[in-house]
Image 1 (cartoon, rainbow, N blue to C red):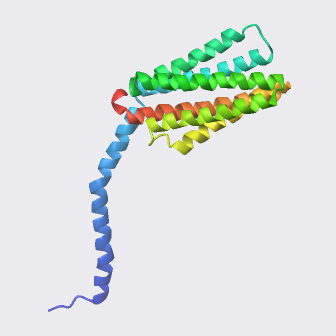
Image 2: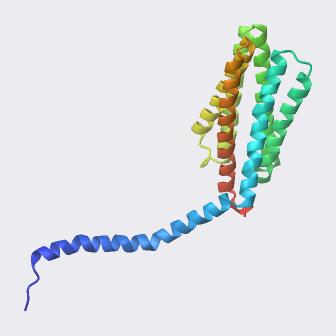
Image 3: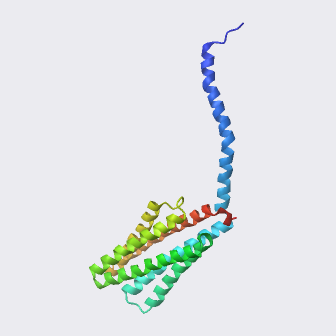
Amino acid sequence: MSVIPLRPLRLFAPLAALLVAGLLFLAFAPAGAEQSRRDDRVQNSDDAIAFRNDMRKLWEDHVTWTRLAIISVVDDLPDQDQSVGRLLQNQVEIGDAVKPFYGDAAGDQLAALLNDHITIAAELVTAAEAGDATAAAEAAQRWYANADDIAAFLSAANPDAWPLDHMEDMMREHLDLTLAEAQARIAGDYAADVAAYDEIHQQILGMADMLSLGIIDQFPQSFR
C-alpha cells in the first residue's frame, strides 16, 4: 500500500480553503452584483435624472435669488421687494419638491424652516449694512441655530443618506459662504463677492445631489 507523503497533505489544506472561499464568493457575489445593477438602473433612469436636475435647479435658484436679494438690499435698489419675494417663493418650491415622498406636513415644515433661513439672513444683512454689530451678532446666532434645525429635520427624514453631523457641516458651510458673500458686497470688494458666489454655487450643487440621491435610494419604487 502506497503512503501519501506528509508534505503534499500540508499543501492540500490551504488549497482546499481557497476552493471553499471561491465557492462561497460565487454563491453570494451574484446577489450583491445584481443589487448593484438594480441600484445603477434606478439612479440612471429617466425619472431619476429628471429629479436630480429639478433638485439642482431649485437649489441653484436658492443661491441665485439669495445673491440678487443681497445686492438689492446692500445697494438699496428699487427691486428689493420683488427679489426677496421671489427668493421666498423658492423655499415653498423646495418644500413642495419633497412632499411626494415625505408628505404635505413635512414639505410645509421644511418650507417654513427655509423661510426663517431667508428672513433671518435678511435681518443679518440689514444690520451689517447699518453697522449695528450687536443686532448682526444676534441675527447670526439665530441663523446658525436655524441651520442646525434644518439639518436635524432632513437627517430625521433620511438618516442613512443624510447623517446629522454631515448635514450640519453642509448647512454651516452654506451659511459661512453666504455670509462671506454678503460681507464682500457690503465692503465693496466685488472680486471677493464674485469668488464667494462661485464657491456657493459649487457647494449647493453638491448638496442638491446629496439630497436627490438620498431620496432616490430611499424611494426606488418612484424612479423606474
